[in-house]
Image (cartoon, rainbow, N blue to C red; front, side, top):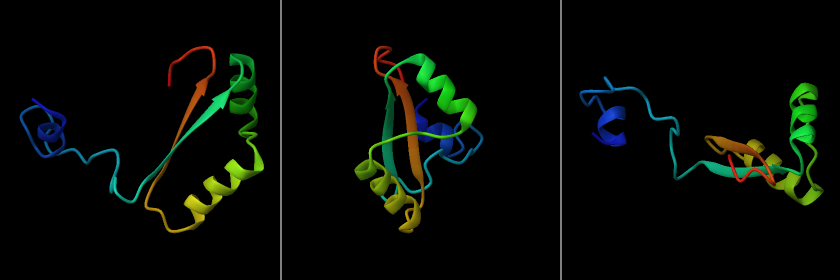
Length: 81
């Protein structure tokens, strides 16, 4: 079985919608925290501090009619997303 089978009604999936609605219209970003503590603080406060140029890119994607904006958060030392 493949992801295609899963999301298009294959034996294991039953026709579940794909997590990315229109990949060609989606924008993807990775936000990197320096430490696990900074990531935890940002999560609790629901605020992410990024450089102004990166904030502009995120805002442009979000406000510019992009179907989906996918943001992945990671800690620089962990090498995990």
